[in-house]
Length: 244
Image: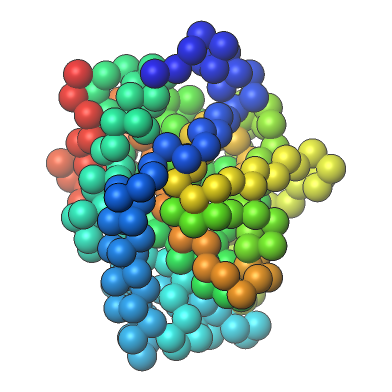
């Protein structure tokens, strides 16, 4: 499912983007499921396990403004179908082998005025620099600069180190700084998929539009890869998605 040129480009640049892999009835099906999750999240008066709100400038949750569903494949098993879509996992298998798990599943609705992630390396959160972890962003709605499309720093996965990350008031997570001149924006149509090294510097800007930008984010690994923090069978948000 990947050409030799695509494999070389992934190794050299650290990412690949595929336009409109999920379309038609399948895309409409997933959008309906995510609409249900947004309605459920926005109806909450306070954060609950798996569901977090956007934060105000003082770092307090904003009721009714969903930020993220963490462990979305635990919360809603229908989303595991998306993580297992052959058009995606067959491409991952060309890089990692035929037996695949995914872990750390997330849904970002990115509502108007909302955020998802700023500049970071996924492996910072995993305590590793392994090149056997491939992150995946699936964009269920059109993503552009106005509503905060993905941006990457090509070749940054080759640094061989994890850069310093810091927490900031009024923001979820820990983030880093980059030279913005190095960033490449990836505007994509609904149903598009980006795969990238978990060592690659990447991030998004806030949603400055009046549109939503539904996306998922998770990480593929060989099924036999032993991650101390995310063991197979011992971590609820690690799932088998392909067996060759």
